[in-house]
Image (tube, rainbow, N blue to C red; front, top):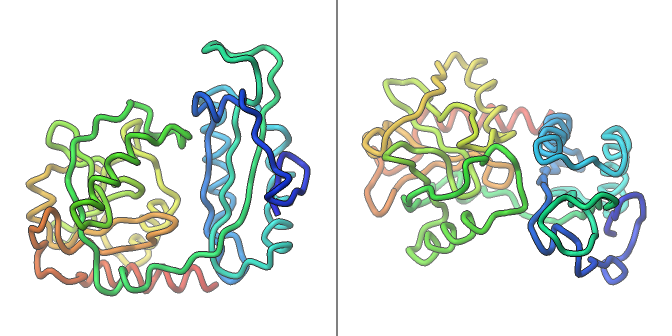
Length: 276
C-alpha cells in the first residue's frame, strides 16, 4: 500500500500531478527509516529531522507528526514488513509552475515500504570507495529531494568498481554519497562535525552514542584526505549501509585492508541496539 497524505492506495492508484513541485523542482524533503523485526528503528529521531528539514524549506506538513507516526506503524503492519525500509517524502504540493512559493498549494506526503536485505557481506568484508570533489549546494543538512549531485557521484563510483563515494571540499573530507564517514586516528573516532556541509545521519548519531558507551573517544572535526588515507580504520554509516568498513579508497588499501577492531566493536554494539 502507498500512504498519500491520509489515504491508503494501491500503487496503481497513487498518482503524482504533473505540476507537483516535488516532480518539477525537487521542492520537498524525505526520510528513509529502517525496519528491523517489524519495528521502526529510531523513528523519533527520523521524525525530528523531517520536521527540521520541513521548517528549513518552509513547508507545512499535511498533518501533525503524531498522526504520521501512527500512519507509518500502520503501513508497516499492513505490508507485514519484517526487515526493510520505509521511504517517505513531503513536497510543497501541486501548483501552476513558477519558482516562487505558491500561495494556495497543499503539501503532499507519500510513503511506502520496501523489503531489503541487511548489508551483512559488506559489513564483514568491507567496501571500496571513490574520492571525489564535493560540488553540491551548501545546505547538505537539509534532507532534500535534490540529489542529482549525489546521484552523479555515486554513479561515478560504481563505474570505478566502488560501492560508495567519499566527498571532499578543499581537501577536507565531508561525507559519503549516501552516508557519513568516520576514521580511526590515534584510537579516536573522528568524523566531520554536524553542520550545513553534511547530513547529520541518524545512524551517525547512534554510533557516536555507542562509542561513548564503549569508552571510545569521539572527535567531531573536519579531517583531510591525507588523514583518510593514513587512518587506522575507515567506515561509513547510514540507514541502509549500517556500519560498513571501507578497506580501499581509489584502490589504495586502508591500513590492513580488513575491517578494524573499533569498527567491529561498534558493529557488535549496533547489532545489540537493533535487536532490543
